Structures are given as C-alpha cells and as structure tokens.
Amino acid sequence: MVVKTVSSRASTIGRGAKCRGKSAVEQSAYISRTTLYSEYYGEKFYPKAAEDLVSTGVMLPDHAPREYMDHSVLWNSVEKVEKHSRAQLCRLNKYSLPNWMSYELADKFVRDFINRNFVSKGMCAEYAIHDSVNEKGERNLHVHILLTMRPILENGEWGEKSRKVYKYDKDGNKIKKKNGRYDCTTEKTTDWDDEGNAKKWRQDLVESINKVAEIIGIEDERWEWKSFKDRGLDIKPTIHLGEKASALERKGIHTDKGDYNREVRYLNSLIVRAVELTREKADKTVSEVKQKAVTVVKAIKNEILDMIREVAERNANRLNLPIRKGKYITKITDRGQLQKRDFLERMVHDMGWTTFEEMNTTKKSLEKEYDDLLEKRTVKADRINYLYGLLEAYKDLPYQEINAEYWKLKNAEKNSKGKGGFLGFAKKSVAQEYKLQHQSELNTYRFHRDILKDMIKEDDKTIRSKAWQKEFDTLSKEFDDTQKPFSQLVWKLSAIEVLEFNRKELVRMLENEGHQKTQELSLDQKRKKPAWE
Image (cartoon, rainbow, N blue to C red; front, side, top):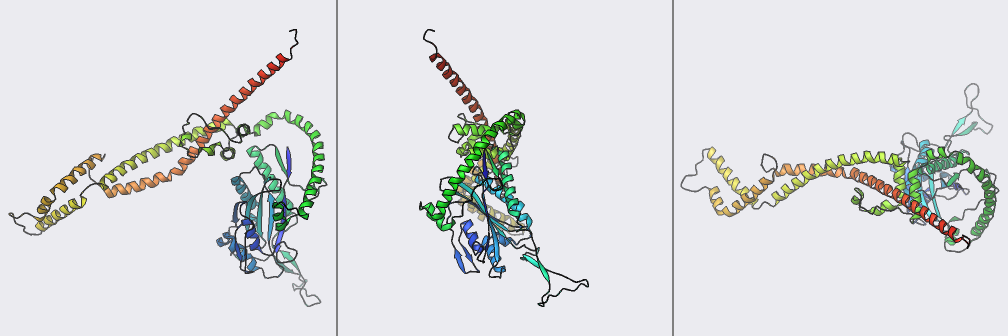
C-alpha cells in the first residue's frame, strides 16, 4: 500500500512586509485564472495561466450579501473595509488532492470540505481546483482556498476582527493607566486563526479522502495528515519556487531553488526507501493477519468496482460494449461514454452499489420506472402526432379565406332579414353572387374539409383548430418535461447492460487464461520427461 502525505501550505495575504502578496483581488485573479481590477490599488491583475483550471467557485454563509458570489465584488469589498497600511486581508490555503479523483468528484469533495470547515463557521471562501503537471510529468491535482478574515454580521456588513475589553475596578469604573489611557486587553471575535486549526483542517481533509477512497474501492493508497517530523522521519521540506523560478523550471532552465529541491527529494527518497524496507518486513506479518479477516474484508469490498478495474487493466483502461444490441444501449448516442472507467465507477458510487445482486435489484425498479414512463410518453406522443396531423391538414386547407368571406356575406344577409330588411326575390343576393363566382374554389375547400373531418377520431367532427393548438402546446411541454428523467433512466439501464456484459466477458477471459496456463504447464512437463520414457 502506498502512503501519501498530504501537501499543504497556508499563507496570509496582506499589505504588511511579512505577508505573502499585497492584494486579495490579485490572489483571486491568480487562482481563478481570470483578469480582475483592484479598486483599492487602481490596478488590473492578469492570470498567469489558464489551462490547468478544473473548476472554481465562491461559497458564502447564509447571511452574506448575495452580490459577494461575484469574486470581484467580494475581494474588492475586503480591500475597501481594511484601512490600515499593514492590514491582513485574507488567508490562502493550498491542499493536494488524490489524482484518482475525477474532476466532478473533486469539485463535490472540495465544496463539502469548505462548507464543513470554513463556511459553516462564518467565512466567505473562493476555491479553485487546478490539475497541473510537475517536472516529472506527473499529475498534480490540488486546490487553492481563499478565505476572509473578518466575520459578516447578520445585517450583511463586515464585523471587527477583534475588540477591546476594558478592565474595571470594584466600583465598576474603567481603570486608567499612568499614561492617561484606559487599561484594556484585545479579544478576537473569532477563533479562525488559532494555531491548531491548520492541523485540524489537514486531518479532516485526509480522513475525508481516505473515507471516499474506501467507499469507491481504492485499496492501494492511503493518505497521512501528519508531517514527516510528527511521524519521526528526518525528512527535509522542499521550498516554494515562486512564479519566476517555476516559469524557468517549466522551460527546462535550472534555478538555485529548483536544484535545492531536487537534492532534497533525492535525499528524502533514500530515507523513505529505508523506512519502506523496514515496513515491508512488518507487512508480511500484517498480511497474515489480513488473511484471517477475509470475511470482514469481503463485507466492505465492492465487487462491481473490482470487476471494472480488472477489465480496464486488461483493455487499455476501457470497458467493452455489448456486441449484440442491448435494449437500452441502442438509445444512447454517445456510447463511447459507457466504455469509460471513470464514468462507470462514478455511476456505481452514485447508485450506492457494492454487489451485482444490489445492482440487479435496482435494475428491476428502474425497468418498472422506465416502462411506466415510456407508456406515458407513448400515449402523449401518439396524441401529439394526431393533433399535429390535424393542425397540418387544417393549415393546408385550401381557399379558407374564400369560404370565410362567403359565410360572412351569408350571415350578414341573414341578420339583415331578421331586422326587417328586404332584398327582393327576383334579384340574387350578394352571397349567392359570390358563391357563383367562386364555386370551384368552394367545392375544393369542402372536399379537403371532408377529408380533415374524416381524420377526427372524436364523434363530434367539428373542426376546432384553436383548441387543437392549445392541447398540442400543453402536451408538447409535458412531453419535454419527461425527457430528462427518461434520459437518466436510459443511461442508468445502459450502464447496467455494459456492466453485466463485461462481468460475463471477464469470467470468459479468466477461464481462457486458466486453460492456457494448464496447456502451457502440460507442455512444460512433457518437455522435461526423460528420454527413456
């Protein structure tokens, strides 16, 4: 098992000479890889890089002003409220993260860590997850967390970092010193800068990492929060390169700081190897104990994740898709996603599966949900298609204007007669004249109208285009609202199909490998037979 020590660094950003950096806005621009303007300094800060940014965000306590979700507004406000020339502005913490974390998992993990340790205590926090590459070409997933130092009051205003506590005599009066000032002490309003916090946060981070690793089945790596010194290892720490030295080292140009770190890493590797040799002897004893606890280990193992890792290691870190068409996988356009190890591991983790039996139980409930939703969608889709056909037929109905004009004239004449008007008998009415002039168009209209009426399934064959359109719009929206849950069901069921297929494939591969080893052993034994046999 590989034991890794979490790498962390904490610094204070402020205007004093002892602080790292002078501007909170500058640090925000640096970690978020965005260009920001500092109103206090009247200066624009540009990001040094952008390609390593995985995700970033701002997290606030409930009573903080919502406009602080904009990191530019937040940190400009921090700089504005601090008046002292040597004021401390904010804290910057940096922590390494396991490279086996997917970006989505890392973001969820970091947000949970920040909420528990900082935001729930009243701090505003901005985080940025980076995935850079070190000089050895190794991934270096890590997070920067920028934290406020002043509390935010319930009214949304910035509070004080500390307050004066005056001393009183027995009569309740303030005690005055010889210099004329009142005797008092300074009391901090928060415990955010307590010396023990750094270790407490490191320990919480590591315990959380190890817990996540156990849940998703990472067994060959464990993280340690204690420093080398606390663990009794005489290991020297490396020094921070800084931006200029880092830039030169990335270009292949050696620096004094870089050479020093390389020498330290070499010496430390010798120490670590000596410790590992000692540990290897102890591991033999530990392994014997572990063999006796196989039943306990099986209880916490995840057989689905084990299968995924086994297949992925044999197949270029990807899983196989079913050769025969599955019921659900055919509905997926991006089937390559279902071959990705990270995607399937995340699916197993999110669904909470540890055994194939649990997965099959979930499959039955998902299939019922799918069938029920499919039936509802089918009914809606049939009705939508039916209404669409009616509306299209109505839209294509020829000479509607002529028919409408004819009935307009006819109704006008009817109303006129009802009011005592007289049009005469010998002379044709205006409606009749219009009908004679457009007899051909009106006949064509009635022909297509009858076809449309035959399309209507209801007993009442009345054409109601407005009612059709309203129902069509309502059903279309209801159908669209079911698209997301339906798509999620299809993805889950497709993933189950892939997992079931690869499980069978793994059994087949293991059997073939077993037969092959048996044949090779048989051949070796034949070759070793004495000549006289």
